[in-house]
Image (tube, rainbow over all chains, first blue to last red; front, side, top):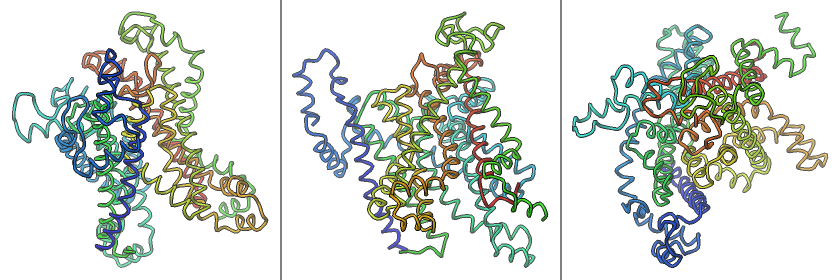
Amino acid sequence: MWKYIAKRILISIPVLIGITVIDYFLMSLAGSPLSMMAGPRASKAALAAKGAQLGLDKPVLVQYFLWLSQILAGNFGYSIKGKEAVSSLIASHLGPTLLLMGVSLLLSMVVAVPGGIYSATHQSKKGDYILMGLSYLGNSIPSFFLAMMLIFVFTVRLNWLPSGGMATLGADLGGGDVAVHMVMPVIVLTVSMAGTNIRYIRSAVLEILQQDYLRTARAKGIGRFKVINKHALRNAMIPVITVFGMEIPTLFGGAIIVEQVFSWPGLGLLTMSAIVNRDYPVIMGVSLVAALVVLLGNLLTDVLYAVVDPTIQYH
Amino acid sequence: MIQLKKRAWSSESFGHIVWRRFRAHRFSFFCLILLAALTLSAILAPVIAPHDPNEIAGMFSAAPTAEFPLGTDQIGRDELSRLLYAARVSLLVGFLATVISTAIGVVLGLLSGYFGGWVDMVIMRFTDMVMSFPYILLVLVAAAIFRPGMWNIILILGFVDWPGVARLVRGSTLSLRESNFVKSSVVAGMSKAHILFSEILPNTTAPILIYATLVLAMSMLDEAALSFLGMGVQPPMPSLGNMLNGAQSLTILTSKPWLWLPPGLMIVVLVMCINFVGDALRDAMDPTSIHRT
């Protein structure tokens, strides 16, 4: 099994390098961020001097390797805008995003697994139709629109929940306060994810319910509960894990939008302001971290496969 | 039993079977009609819109009246006209982005699946890289670099969203390559282009079409999100996303629902209908579901 995991890690490395290359060359298409930094009135000489200081006068390929060697040394560079170290910027913004993503991922599974099983075991009945309708609805609502509706209901009308931020300004109220601020962003992220997951899980369970070993289990007369929860569910875990792995990039993207609407102080908010300001070191850093998170998620998925499915080949 | 037998022997064409089965999904059929009506009204927007979408026609942020059925926006433009034009822009973006990404995905998938070896290796690793990148992040970065705007958004979405199609087509091609009719074409000395595009491609149309409806729904949601963030279709050109962008202020959210509810609901209805139609299409085109009509 360790050999299998090691192999998975080795496969991830070229993908990671490829991602940085794609990202870097995409970024170099943008032209010079110099003129933005120095303003329209700076002379050409001043621009050139500043450019040399930042290493921007070198060819793109050299810049890429300069940057990569810095990354490997643990130096993500400095934000062009705020002069702060990118690594510390990311470190301070990563936590809130991971918190948001983790809670939403967990909650979407808590909703989707029982929902999908119920839907599959009650196929073509009223409950199934209602759940499927809701799942399509959850899938089709743009996250920002759902966010606006939630703010309208819970902040404007009912005044129950704060409309944004991670904590009440000027007050240190601890974890409960953060939890209250998290409710709406988490709902938004969960709805779209659960909408997708519930259908995956439903079709996975449906397929398993038709297998011969389940007919055998039913024929033994061990009861419906045991058939579904012991025999069907275990085998349905594999597609569930696949979904889990696929969701991570989507979730990260969703977090960018949700953080924007709710001004949640995470990577998404950082990314958007960096994009607007053309702050290349920050964009590069965030992209790299995002790709890392995704790769780690995929790795975790592969490991979980090995844990759940004893028949998997560790070749 | 008798019915089954009759069907098995009938000379009904594939198109007919699909259509008959599709209609059996009543709700999806209703969605198809709704979608057709909305698309038609979007196409005919220049004819049926009561006002020019960019013309300042009335009071600022006025509530709905007989003259302005959905009220007016912050600078006095007719909201209904803007909504029609916005649907037009959003559908166009979604459609063209889907065409581009499907075309790229089909070509890469065919090459990868048919030739195998290092071609397959290179294409699939590249696909992995694009896929493991958070999609919205990639699109946002690209939109920032290439300047946001309708045509750039179409190209960006089109060039980013192909990996799913590529994998799908690769899978089908791998199995079709081993089929007897393809092998016989190889033996007959047919050109590779003929085998790829006239023998293999037609046999993967059904899954591609179904997947394309999914991509269409996704592209429209992405366009809306991008425009909402100000990185997509730029005002004054209306799109469903950027109409909502203006509604982020609390006063509009609280007291002027006609400015943000209609565009939001329009996206939900369009995307949901596309999803339902795609789902019914999958059922209707599935050759193994013959017993389920």
